[in-house]
Image (cartoon, rainbow, N blue to C red; front, side):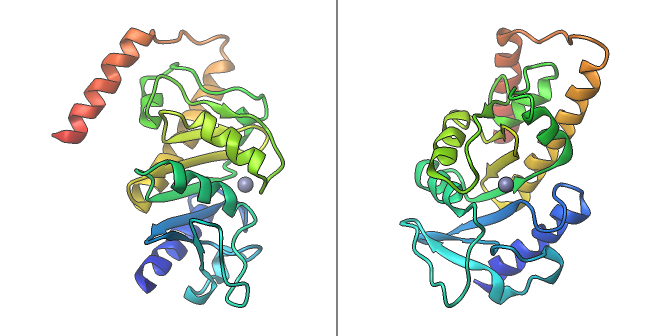
Length: 210
Ligand SMILES: [Zn+2]
């Protein structure tokens, strides 16, 4: 348990140092038994201690005396309930992913690396107020068949089979967002066909097995 908490703190600090989220924005969780550990509400990552990391059950229960989870804990809960392969979640307000999200658009296959998110594009979840079930619903829709998505006027979210992979995917989404913005400055980029993206996706699957 303390190992998971220490890992969450390590990666929370990396949200700051790798410029994925400033100060206390964004949040990180790791699935554990019948629930998940998550970063607390309103604390700067630089000052986090093991005791600050909060456990929330899949039914959404937590002990207020121990701590208050991030105000965005509900979409973590809903993702863990629906996605069995989600073992860790990274949510970030990273600059470039957020910039794209404010145009309420996802990222098409302008580069084959969008396949990292699991499909031929990275969708953008519809806007809803943070911390609401409506936002959860919109995020789950955008995550259908995907491990990452943008969230309109908000940021991005990525999950994977462990925290290191989820963090790497969030970094990848940020990098792809920067490349997409740069490409748009030159006009409209050429988009890869669905057929080509199918080839890329099957290659990625085989690579994972091999
Ligand atoms: Zn957020």
